[in-house]
Image: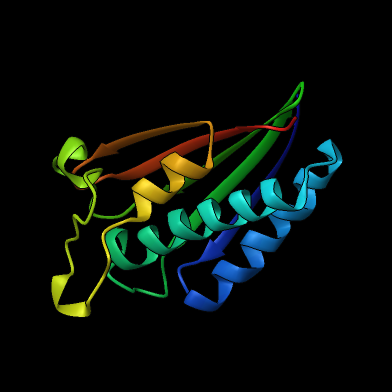
Amino acid sequence: MDRICLIIKALPENESFARSVIAAYATRLNPSMEEISDIKTSVSEAITNAIVHGYNNDPDKDISITASIEGNTLWVTVEDKGVGIPDIVEAMKDFYTTKPSEERSGLGFTIMGSFMDTLQVKSVVGEGTTVIMSKVIS
């Protein structure tokens, strides 16, 4: 199995860099432009969630992003060591947000789930959150 690992500081400007790195890696599978767009959007949402919700915009924290290719499937994992999610089922509902005062849409997990083929969220309060996504490239 081939994979890449990337560790970025929890800065908004690093989100676009990480998104581009994962998209470039995915080109090994010769994806369509739509598939690349789906991957980039989903990675962006996962990283933004880590920055805003996991770390409360603390730029000194690290986010780990791993991508691997198995057959014609791209796997992406985004992990933070932030506050964690007390109720994953509730957090994955449309329009749920922990930051309503910041006018967050609460659609991050919904977007990831609709653009990727699989989405799994693991979280422990006080220890962090791991988002695991996959996309089959046709």
